[in-house]
Length: 132
Image 1 (cartoon, rainbow, N blue to C red):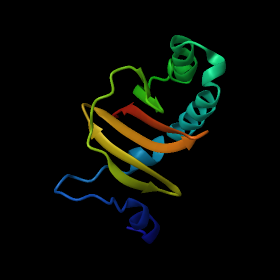
Image 2: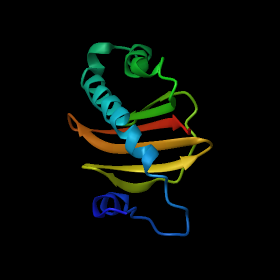
Image 3: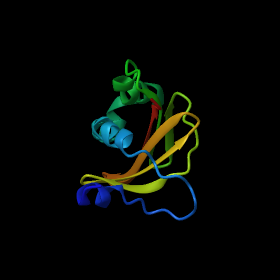
Image 4: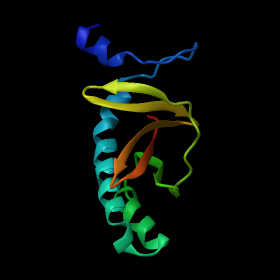
């Protein structure tokens, strides 16, 4: 194993769980980051989008035709928006390349998640991919 791979593969978790297959998360991080950026822009425009339904429709629009995505959950402040059925998975801190996020597996899904701040509000993005 190369030193670089060993460094990013280090999962900061306790317990006897099997480690994630890190090739799959690495391949999915770019898609996660793109959706997270979309969610951040959408959250910034939340007031302009008006009602909850319009915001949810806009927020999840990029995912509707993506066959790799099983589900998503986005929390903006205290509001929770969901797309599909996100399986609960024990999440562990991951570092993949320069990206720091959480990841886990559950119910045939690979879940990646991260919390950020958007305009003084907490934004949590959870994106579940179908396992290959």
